[in-house]
Image (cartoon, rainbow over all chains, first blue to last red; front, side, top):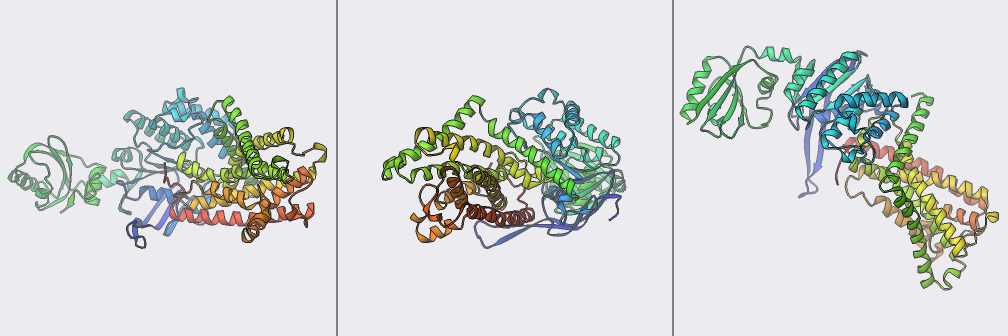
Length: 337
Length: 285
């Protein structure tokens, strides 16, 4: 593979086989990845965007050498992850969000120092870097705190620091801002952007289900659902491709579920629904303006009341809706016309 | 990978894991409480043996068998400490701390890491062994005299014993890697079985023949016998046919065989764990 590529996968497939408890001899197969193929050049921040269970974490686990693929190939830093995992580990770092890992009896500083030593960092340089990164994530005052005293969010910040501490050549960030407050998540996103600017030879693969995060950070994103890449490209390009269609958000009162109604309207190419206490919100992608009249008439005939209507520029969420056929939080909820 | 880089990585992994192991081992309590615990636990263990022997064995602690049993029991403290300690690291890091996946994605020598984590347990066990032997010598007339110790034999036995127990720990660590559930007792269960089979608290020949054969096939049996001979000048009559050199040769030879078995088993288990996605599995906590 070209040395310009930090990551490459080819027809990557992963099937998990589990035994059903009730019938021990019967095996159940779950296809987590179904022929994933993508390439990430060095220096790029590449996003893998998809809902829970789409296969994002499985992809990262394979690339980080924690899991072997059922078939297909993956190379990280030009090294086959299946045949030479140990060599891959000299080039990578990983941060998983939303977890509380760490040696609870050690302080934040000790946890981080220990990892710096695994990578052979000189102690003085490691301590300076730890101080610098803890300041970035706002954990300086907790450096001497044993981590079992930290909240989940604080532990997550510490893990984030651990990932960047050794400045790895290729970094896997698996939902790094999951569960963090808005301000902290924004700070971390800013840090990631700056870090890549300062280290243009480094590569980041980020998985997320936060559309705005992918939109803000990633040079390219792969939209993944049920183990398959459905679209891949720069967020701006993906959104531009949608511009020939209209994206409309309707807020409708008087109905709990408008999906059966919307599904009957011709030329509604995609829609998703979010239920609120007082209304339902429906994002609809229309083939053209003329469809809107028919749609509103159908809603009214079904007993619904239009509370508001907003026509807007496409977002990554709309791209997802368009290529997947349902909204992000409703795996079977939306629909395709 | 160049060999000097591999050596540095191994040394680094061992050093950091030893530090981490000691922090975990000693940090769970106040230093004073930890010191008391380190003394009281072996003393209590030795006293249980003494009272058990006094109550059951003919002649009690004055029985000619008692010194060999006492030394065997004292040395066996190392077995669960090192063996279960190393395999426990897999469970602890994976299930409790959630860190095994980060260790595995770092440039770490996993063998050196596991052995390093066992060092702290071995250090605590050493205190327990010394305390127990002192109790035996000073209060129970166990005939250990500094001038009578075969230093060459004890040194050889301790070095090869450390290697052997570490390798047993790695072997069990491999088993632990692929047994995602119900694996908490693996180390202790194996140590319990070895306590029975290695002639620790009674002569090997008192076991049923088939168990005696199993016991004679275990390197720990010979290791304990070597330590007995080194400290007491005599061991179990069952091994009278073996000279000290031959005994040490069996320990070293079986350790070499065990090395191949342990490394092979662990690598196989590692491959299986990666294939099944068990390296970061959290099943119990």
